[in-house]
Length: 307
Image (cartoon, rainbow, N blue to C red; front, side):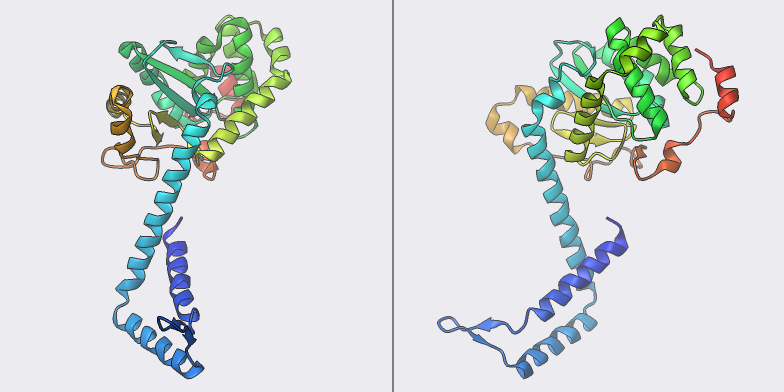
């Protein structure tokens, strides 16, 4: 929520205090203030606010904190209630160690430049660690080509080529188009005709619908976003930070329940990594999502695609 909206809400809250009069007084028999008394109280409050305007910002800060805590609690409940959908969905592709002691979930879009920026480092880190189970949640939010690429990737499971195809699309140095997606598919050994047939399967609609629903309930509106332990972590975080979060999640798995309940919860709204917040492509920022990795026009991109 923007600053202006918070100021407006803060002022409305203060107005609410004023219009809540007449107030009820007395311990045994409640009485209402007369209109004249109510006007006097309103005037006192008005004068106080004019003399102490900082109280408005205190009210806004209190409102912001209340909203943050409510959001964190909502996400905490969703993580618990939809645990199996997040971590144990048989339709969700998995990389790394299938029996790993820490599961990381990534919501991503193949056209997201920030997802692509960290894709190789992420897989390298997962392989180096040896104990991470990485669950992929296709979350195409950047237009029809994103949806096309996500369906193609999911369909590639039928040819046991998901990870190869996923990696090829993430590492492509050109803007993805439908024809580029198919050229990448052929380059990694997929049968393009079978792939196109499998992309029409209705179960892919169900998978994407579940992913959209999970993202909405977890208040995820950008890519990449990671679920690491009990944290929702937005943005293209540095791998050093990723390792710390994985280590924290791994330690939490060995805590006794009483200790784990006391562990502070940090959702996306409270997590800041490094000197500035990590980069992500947001659903409401299509200008970012459409930022090109190269300057070719779509036709030129297809001609110059490097696999």
